[in-house]
Length: 199
Image 1 (cartoon, one colour):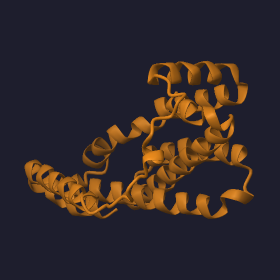
Image 2 (cartoon, rainbow, N blue to C red):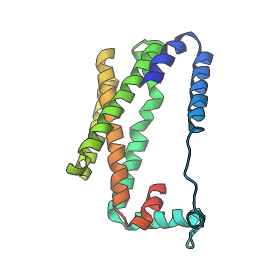
Image 3 (tube, rainbow, N blue to C red):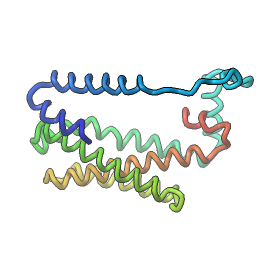
Image 4 (cartoon, rainbow, N blue to C red):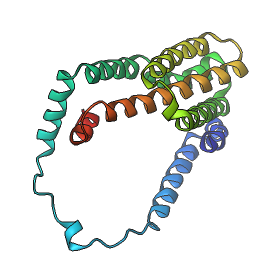
């Protein structure tokens, strides 16, 4: 939320400064990672698992299991549809800001900040209510709402209303992604969980 609000106005003046700001933020983040400390492992914890297989074999097993299991196959098809037809909207946001709303880099920052705020609100709501909700039905509602609010964003002539639409759209998209990940992880046995997710 904060990054786009800072870099948006910078974009209006100099693209180079915007890249410098983003690079600085990455280095600051890396600096914070250097403060992480991990507990020392005992020799027993450090041993390689006896049944370790190759990543390629794990991927093929996940692929095979995913195609053979109807619920996982349906989830993967839905995931592909949303990834192909909904998430690419992100590459058009600068065009919308510049050529449709005529708000430049500052407005583009507002669009990204609104999207980030929507993501936080909706994923927080999903995580708070998670156990009591019918996840599969809610995931379908979220994916449909994601598409609907993207269409409303695309057709809205008012910038303020468009910020609300993009916040709801991206929030629904993130809620959908959270539910999708949960369903994929719980649709198969524990030993296939990582393989299914990698697929």
